Structure formats: C-alpha cells, structure tokens
Image (cartoon, rainbow, N blue to C red):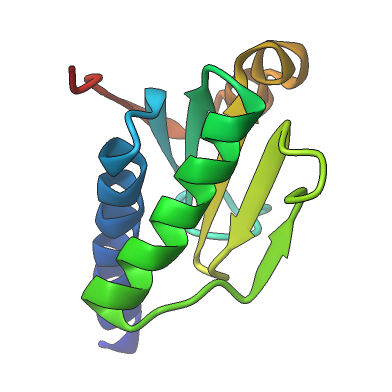
Length: 125
C-alpha cells in the first residue's frame, strides 16, 4: 500500500515541476517515467530547455518557488546554478533537468534513458 502512496506523491510532484517549468516558458518539456526500470535512481526525470542561460536560471527558480508554494516541497540538492547550462533539481523521487538548448543536445539524456516511458508536454505559447 505504501508503494502506491509513494507513486502517487511522485506523480503529483512531477506535475508540479512541469507547471513550474511552464510558468517560465520552458521549451520541449519531456517526462521520463523510470518506475519500471530496476536500475533507475528515481521515479521520474523531467527535462526541459531554456533559450538562454538567464532563462535556465529563471526556470529553475520558478520550479523551486512553485513546488514550495503548492506542495511545501523543496529540492534535496541543487547542482549547476553557477554555470546555468544544466541545472539539476533533485527532489529524490523526481529529478528535474533544466538545460540550455545546446547543452541538452550534447548530453541527450532522453536517449540514455530510452527504456523509460516518455511523455512530451506541449509548449505553452
């Protein structure tokens, strides 16, 4: 029964992270559901792109602000804020990856986790 509650809370957190990304006009948002992959480090990856390093920083701040406001959640760890090309927000069960467009193309995380169930979120204009 606890596993179902954890899955549900991870899904709710994942949705809040997507909303936080959308608030700052993140591009190409992708959710990778990793729950069925034995070697996965978390339940979900949420990946998006920013058009500039300034936007990458803004998106990461928006996600942190939104998850704190809506769910009273804050990241366990934040990496990459100083270079703003790849900011990682680790919420333990969900990890958000906010990339500068060219950096995302270089690392291609979606391909590395190709076994995951992929959901593409439409851009909001």
